[in-house]
Length: 182
Image (cartoon, rainbow, N blue to C red; front, side, top):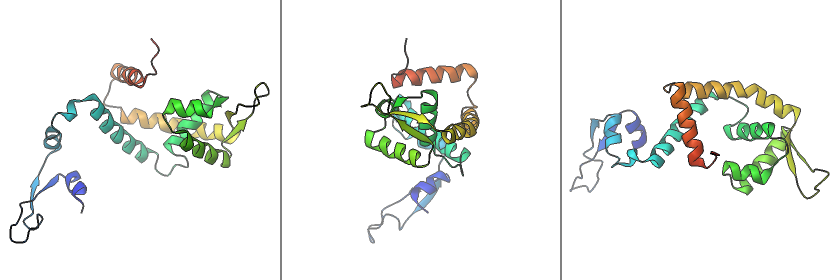
């Protein structure tokens, strides 16, 4: 069992170094530890917004993956298809910049979705140098199929918040992301 697994089970390794063997795990003592004790040992990090956002993100994605286990589409793929579906003609670079995805990574994602016939690249007649993205019928069907599952997962994940708290959280996160137009 790894140390991480031991901490998740509520146990922490408290090693005392054995001078004769020079091995810290020889005299291993297991002491139960609570989640609150771990939080208290973060030296104030738990009180910073950035750290809390990152930990919340990890917890949320872990729950989201559980809700969508066995799906034929990833969270990232759904996000891309949904954005394109709501904004037909969106350019790949604009999408990458908005979602903070590196351009080469976005190219790979778009290529994979195009190979699966979920989206297509369209060259507009009025600007032959530009390439726009549109969903295919299969891509729209995929968004239609999985949108309720994503909404249900989000509703479940944030069930500890009332409606006002959820709207406030959403507004603050949009503001932090630079997406809020005031």
